[in-house]
Length: 110
Image (cartoon, rainbow, N blue to C red):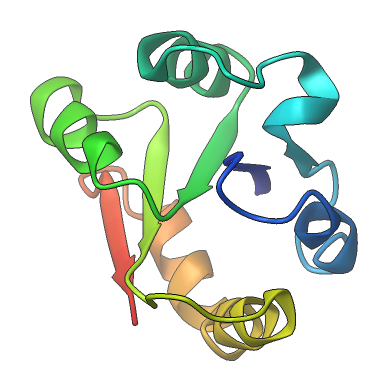
């Protein structure tokens, strides 16, 4: 599984998580900064990414269209990049189960 990290999260997060999620990248690294949610959605789905975000608009897209892409919504409020990394790492098993379940399109993490 590889993550596409939303612009509301640090670009370094994809690098920090590369050992767990090889091939992960940030939207800015693929030219999608300040792009519409639909363009990001389509890019993630077409290129096999799971989308990591804090943006609740992607919940609506996930529920409307279903996967791909799958969406991981961080419901963490304001916190540091290292705290987000810790949350993701401590939920690695949940990520794996989520990725393996074809029926699920949305994972909420707190």
